[in-house]
Image (cartoon, rainbow, N blue to C red; front, side, top):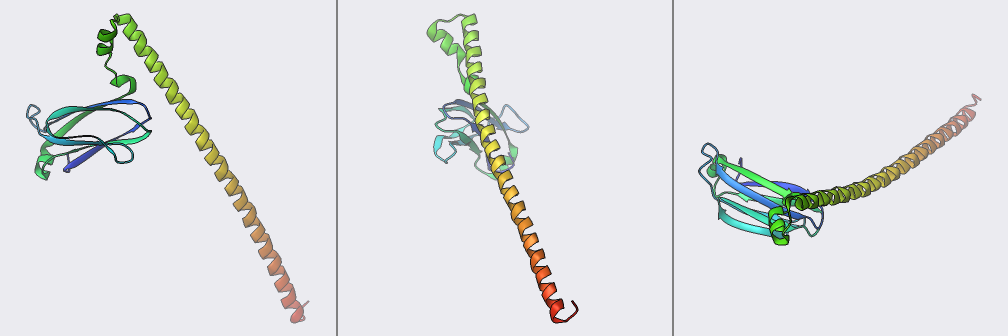
Length: 182
């Protein structure tokens, strides 16, 4: 860590399971743990998890809205920060699901668990595809709107240039008639 506070950001959709594991240790001696404070916030700054004085730990939540979630880790002083290395494992969606607990609870065999994993992976990929289609549509709309604005700006600029030329011709013709050169 280079400063007393280090933050990790993750873009997460709504209704997604999120699990984060962290471990803080000395830079040169990985066996020596260093206590850190952890604060996890949603996109609006609402604190979802907060703990202090832990060498390692875990936080878990289900996202209520899509956006950028933030996990900040801090140490007591700047000297400790220079000597601290932090390992963070931030898992979302299917990767955050505890499949062993599900298999024990529902008495499932290994093949059924793998099929459920695949099914959940397919659902996650499908929902991401729908989200990407929605973003693509939004970007297309923005692009078309910008294109329309540029076209109107070009037409108005051309009109101003033509009007300026007409005014210049009118002024010069009037000027030369007064001077009796024409």
